[in-house]
Image (cartoon, rainbow, N blue to C red; front, top):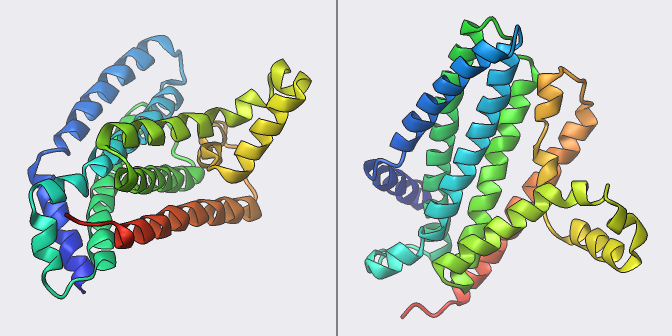
Length: 254
């Protein structure tokens, strides 16, 4: 119960900061891009709009997760509200999970609002919303959650700027790891190949969350793959959550 109270309060605080106004500007940008698509895409404006829209939803979620997640705990320490809350019968774990829950709600609202806008635009262009769009939105949300969990963890062991840089580096590397494996240096350099293989095994591969090509071209994805991808994403989310809890419990709050 305490977790949900803290989560609701965090949601209200972020909402009052008008961060979701950025969603409106992204929607306006998407509208402009839709106009361009309708003029130059010759019959596939709906597909182009869906492509751009899913990309914008993903980037906006990651941006919110990065910049708000990096300040989620440091701002509470600077404002001394963390010490006031923890002086009550509230554990550190309840406080941390509650704060994350509130930001997760903001990320969900951002995704839902942008998708509603995108849905209307695609239908207005006689486009088609396939069954896999729901899965794409699910993975986009999980992706933003993982970025949030990473940056919160790094904010516990470093400052705000470094935590953003480290999380962004893992995000970019996680999306580019599969592309690197197609290059000749990877195939011809055993040392580089070993490093890349080791990295892909021990660091999150964000390409798992990207099924946009399947959505756009209506390709079939087996249920077993979706289950594995969901389990993979859940593992990394739980990993960074548990690591954050461990470091937060051990951190000296002075």
